[in-house]
Length: 115
Image 1 (cartoon, one colour):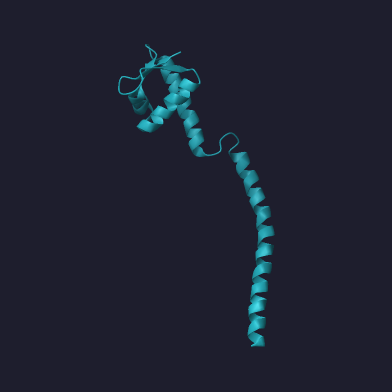
Image 2 (cartoon, rainbow, N blue to C red; image 1 turned 180 degrees about the horizontal axis):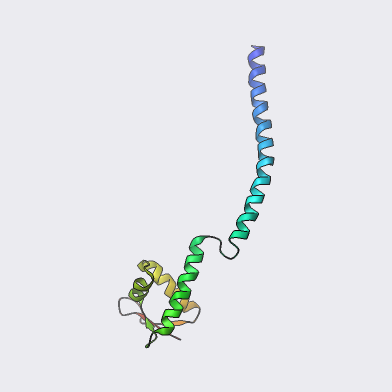
């Protein structure tokens, strides 16, 4: 019985010691990895943010070239190849920036005019 207690106690003690050592060794590695990732993604937290920024820039340039300066959800979807919801969010973002103004309240007759 004493032998069993000694083996179990040693195993638990070894596990705890291993955990503690692993934690401190690993912590140093995570800090290096985080610093490296910060350098690589200097301006964007994730690729989705970068894609959104690029799409909004493309959309702004596209709206500037339109003779009537009008764009709607379908035009955004077709131009960027995005979903209906994403097109709505992009148009909302441009409206918040005062780049476009919404004309109409809801439905297929809503469009946005360049400011």
